[in-house]
Image 1 (cartoon, protein in one colour):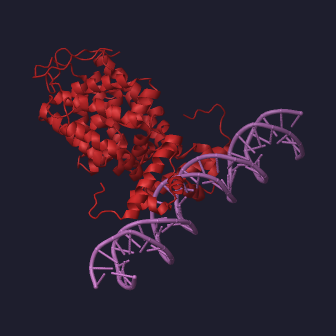
Image 2 (cartoon, chains in turn orange, cyan, red, blue):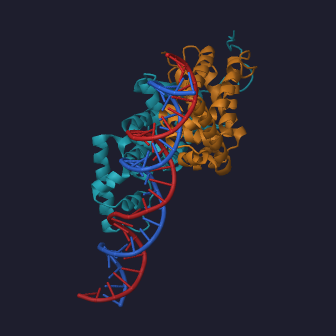
Image 3 (cartoon, each protein chain N blue to C red):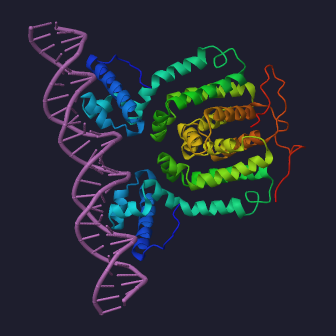
Length: 208
Length: 208
DNA sequence: ATTGCAACCGGAGGAATCTCCGTTTAGGCT
DNA sequence: AGCCTAAACGGAGATTCCTCCGGTTGCAAT
């Protein structure tokens, strides 16, 4: 989201880092849901205006805190080793991707929660689109003719911090059970169907 | 969520209605994203405290604005006529339910968006649980032994105002296309597979 | 009618997000 | 070194959500 057409000025870069450091520390101390930009500014000895100029808004700052791992994650499934990277069968890659995504979300659950309650552009921003493109490509390889884009959205919709958190806390699911659920989901989407012979036939798979 | 162990006092009921009316009017005039509880209170000639005592928080008020239709919706799929009500085949009921849910969300898109950005208990509150129980039951009927609860969450996760709004605005999908996507999704989840886990004979292999 | 009290009312105020704008500074140019 | 301008700084303040609490009122029982 933030390319550098011109490099940042030295003081700007210094303040950016100071803000990120303070934010990381405060989150470690008090938890991400208590994150107050005013307090971060105070702690980092900069004005609030500086925080907002650097990161745009609350979601922008949160995104910055998540960005480094996101980059590593994207490298893993785009150019890394199988099963998540290229080289494995598409179905296996889908399943490995979803399992890794669940791990990633659980690891920074609070931060993702903040992102998801922010403005839509934070939730469906850069990372979402990369993940979506990736899944869409894989699904289309396995099931050409399906609505791969929609199915990819459906898989990603199940991998939100809010839902995962809810499933763990209120339904008592473990991370392993959630991953097993994703496995079943992915297999269902990706396995060729047989014509239903049950009482009332649905129509066969839709054509675009 | 709000049962009345004791009936409301007359002035309380009057104020509740006044607040709901003003909120409805202000939303119609200015849109739901501009909804300010302070302003509603001013417009309704009550103190802010009154608004919060009646509705708990912002999400509570929004929920009240959505509640009547929710009640009708629940009646439709629990005791109404097929295909959404009992009497039709489970698969057809699932598909009809999802189509109706999409319609319902689109109809009050802004309000659902507000609900989804509120605290988790607003999003996974009463209505969500009713929908989830309903879908879980139907899925379990068609596919006993599956993780019906997880699959129900997955279906509901795709039926959020944020995602639907995103699909319409950024991906250019029509409501009909979204419903068709849900059809495909539901059929995939509900159709028996060829083999649970073993590699199936006709699986296409494609990877550069 | 009167009374008593639980429920209700209103708005001041705390905390947070974000904007605006006058002031300061970094760093290239002469 | 000295200057000049675009960029960055900082904090006051507007807006919003929500809490708190002293004063008020409906209403049931006397």
